[in-house]
Every structure is written in structure tokens, then in C-alpha cells.
Amino acid sequence: MNVLKRCFDFSIALALLLLSSPVLLLCALAVKLDSAGPVFFRQYRMGRNFHAFELLKLRTMEHRMSGTSVTLGADPRITCVGRILRKYKLDELPQLWNVLRGEMSLVGPRPVIPELTREFHADYERLLTVRPGLTDPATLKYYRECEILAVSADPMKHFKTVVTPDKLQLSAGYLQKASIWSDLRILAQTAKAVIPHISIQIVVTNHDVPDSIWKPFAQPAGKEYPDQLVRVHAGAADLMACAEEEGAAGD
Image (cartoon, rainbow, N blue to C red; front, side):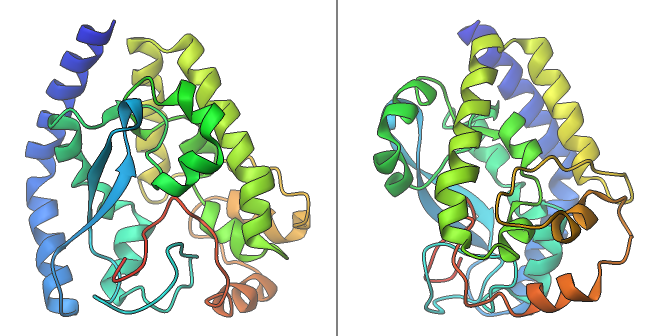
């Protein structure tokens, strides 16, 4: 299974990287023209067997702008181009290179910052027996995680006590039944989620967020959000959550 999965990852990642290279080039040019700084953002994430590696993303934040190591959707460091790249997950394309290098898989538990693996060490001892991935069931369930956390009364607490434990459980469940066929299904579901104008069904467990606030995110793309959500989201830059997003000093 390991050899087959690695061959599967390499061949699909190579094909996707070649096909997306024009888009990646245009995105890189837009990043460079939009703000000063490098095109790529690099951050250490924890990989297989607790070996850290440099995860690649297109830079979506102002370079060297101070801030927390975690970000929320309305973070003031995010550039104009960065908002578009994040919306359609285009900033994640360079991670196909991480897959080619053998640091990541196409499907597997998302790579997180080392601090989170220390806090939830027992869980990650099991999860990091495999390569972290671009997507997995937890990624799909929390596809709009930042927006949901933005309207939480205490986003960091919610992230640590609700979102992260649920993600760990979902990722562990995936590992128990992982196969090439399940990976193909998850990749197809991920493609559906990131393609614009396709309805995305969001399943969330928000103990401190009223249904009236988070349910608009489960509506088909293009729907208008209620004024209450827009106001809350716009004023959320001072909150800290979404540790799976990019860190301080530029992303």
C-alpha cells in the first residue's frame, strides 16, 4: 500500500503541477505585482514521524508585517491578491512540490505547526505515522473554518476544544480505512469544494455559534451573507484562530 500510494501521489501531483503551471505562474506574477516581498511563503510544519519540513504556499500576506502565528479570515495582513488566492485555495498549489519531494501526500492529515503536535502529542503519534496531506475528510468538513471561527465568541478556545479534537478524530478514522479508492473519492470531493459556483455543504459543530450565523456558509456559492455576519467578519481582525493557516512575519 505504501509503495502504491507513493506512486499514485507522485504521478497525480506531477500531472496536476504541469496542468496548473500556467495558473501558478499567473498567480505568482500577481503576488509579486501586488506587494513587496517573496512570491512564496515557507513555514515549518510537522511531517511523517515528527520530521519537520518546509511547507510551500504562495504568499498571501504583507511581508515582514508583525502579527500572531495564527490568522483569521479578516486578518489585516492579507493582501488584495491574497484574499482571492485564499478564497479559491490557489495559494496551496505549491504544495504539489512538497508531494513530489515525498514530504506530503495528496490525501492525509493536514500538516500542522510543531506547537500543535506537542499539545496533542498522543493523537499525532498515530497520525504522523503517515505523510501529511493536501486534503482529508477533516479538511473537507472544515473547508470554511476561518469564517466559522470568526463569529465564535472565543475562537481560540473553540479551535482547541471543538475543532481540533474533531479534526483529529476524522483524520484517525480516515487512516483506519484509507485506500487508493477512498483517496480518489476525497480528491474528487475536494475538487468540487474549491471549484467556484458549486454548492458546498458545510457540516460544523459549533457549540457557541448560533445556527443563524454559520448556516449561511452552507448555502450555494454566490449567496449574500446576512449583514450581521458581514459586520462580525469585518471586525474580526483582532481575533486569533485557524492555526492551520499561515504564521507570523509575512504569512
